[in-house]
Image 1 (cartoon, rainbow, N blue to C red):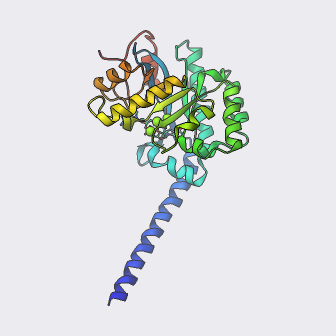
Image 2 (cartoon, rainbow, N blue to C red):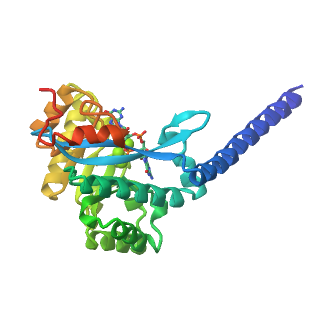
Image 3 (cartoon, rainbow, N blue to C red):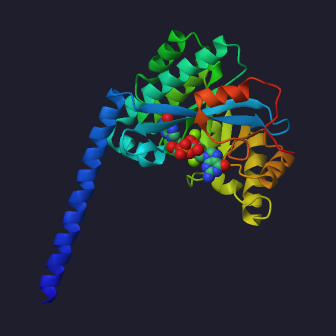
Length: 283
Ligand code: C2E
Ligand code: MG
Ligand code: MG
Ligand code: MG
């Protein structure tokens, strides 16, 4: 009797596994189609000067305009794209679309200094630098207006090739930002080993500032280290005035989060750009 139950459990388990791998295969095929049918789009979220509230940059964030499911957030497909390797093609699509948009805004005389674009560790192949330079050149953009957001995972397992690629990107004029800083269980010693310009404090440490005392202590420490290493700081996921004011009081340079603005389509983002002197801080 026990053996039979065990066997049934096994059967359930393996059919569940099969369904999950089928779902994965389906998602991978759907993502191929999405690329072919141009179903991806970029939304833009402003990054503001913490003292003045003025926009100094924006982050481009991918969404999937799915014919049945509607607007799908990246958390639901980027991990699969990374697993299957399709992130390389999606990543170049993102980079091209973001540069095209940035070039258009610059032609229109809209004052956006910098556009941040996320890079997956899997994009760090031999041709990355040449590919990215070809795209910025095609759109007649200086590399200096593009900030590349990289992950701690990339730095933690960075070999000589990755390090050389990061140095070449920096040499070419791109800014480098370390995204989601503090989530990677990494040691701080590596920070100075790479040509970083920006450090993005992960939103989990911003939550509940200043009342959340452990977050306040962590954020103080991160800001202290970053200022010593002459890195620019961007706090992510700022959701309210208390968080914004505390971060500004600690000399965090830039803020990004729903309190300032949610990510939005390009057509809406231009409305934020027009009155360029405007502050997004509510106080
Ligand atoms: P990320 O790069 O850390 O982007 C910040 C995420 O935080 C975005 O989620 C943004 O919408 C969200 N966010 C911003 N402000 C707030 C806030 O005040 N509160 C809360 N709760 N969330 C806030 P999103 O757009 O869903 O993107 C999730 C992640 O997907 C990104 O995290 C990034 O890791 C990845 N991703 C997005 N676009 C791309 C892309 O083009 N390429 C790659 N490789 N990854 C991407
Ligand atoms: Mg990012
Ligand atoms: Mg982030
Ligand atoms: Mg994040």
